[in-house]
Image 1 (cartoon, chains in turn red, blue):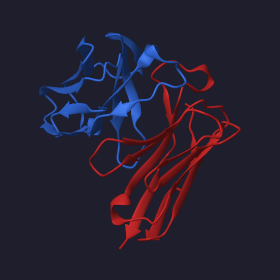
Image 2 (cartoon, chains in turn green, purple):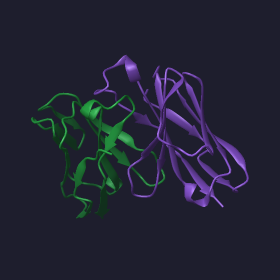
Image 3 (cartoon, chains in turn yellow, brown):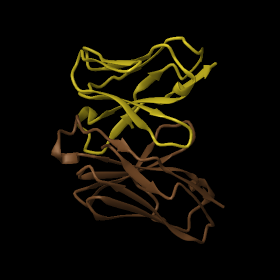
Image 4 (tube, each protein chain N blue to C red):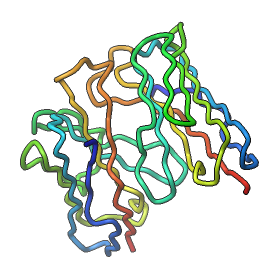
Length: 114
Length: 117
């Protein structure tokens, strides 16, 4: 099925560093979602973007909806150990798909060294 | 409140057992979902219920049987599972057809970690 190209696949950083990850697609999305998943838990919605060009912040997190509607990035500033987890981008309804069909990126595994 | 709850948190079952997973939301959402997730992979869609009716079955084996008793509850009945069915099972909900298909945002529960022996 459809996939979003998410990169990087993994990141190993020192506490205090900034992090950047992105997702690209060959299809247009009208919504970009960023989720974080910690071990043994379900994905938690971090940021939802509904408008092309939109830049949204949530604490130390900033995400942007690309102007072409085919990409999005997520930045984390001044990382801390609790930022560890897998970050997924996702988009609903691409290419006329039906309700319920959420397209996911493959995830970015973030490790933060104290 | 964007909370989806799931019980149990962990489940160990034998291949001949029958068990059920439960999911609940009180956000007034009209779409509910079951996903299966393997380690370090994105969730894989299994079933979608829209207005309490099954709208999508992603060719899931019949040993998984979903049920939506009302708009707030979703069950997944398990019978004669195989060891390869061991995974994290996630429930999610969204507004569904109350909003546009391309803005329908899903909220996930904490999951049930299933181990089949």
